[in-house]
Length: 142
Image (cartoon, rainbow, N blue to C red; front, side):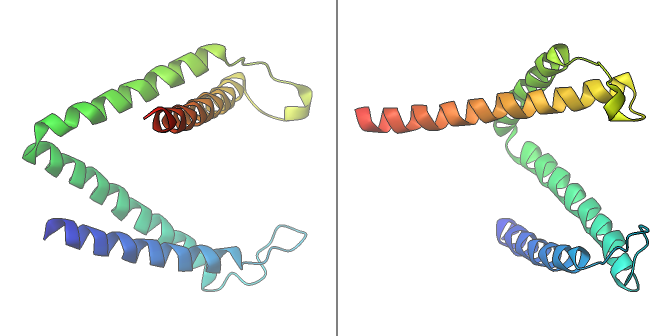
């Protein structure tokens, strides 16, 4: 029952989010940076943030309810979160905080965080491709 309600809410939020995304993308911006048709469309961005907050609260609430119902499932999540933290720490260590003149008014910490985000993306991309290759090869062997 609880899962059925979650699925219905998830699809409803996805549909509303898709509609709001399309309507927000239709906003026109002039060369001066002013919004040409920001009447009701400006409200869509605020409503999207509101839906995002509700979705995050629902996701966290679902995680807490799952942890209470079956604490052993939480170990897999903890391992995944720990692995993500390790990947980000490695990425942050690899990133340089060097700021070039072409960056404009960017601080060293911002440059380092952007570099860490890029390294995190690259590492996770390589791991995803390797896992797909591993799964394909292991299926061929079986």
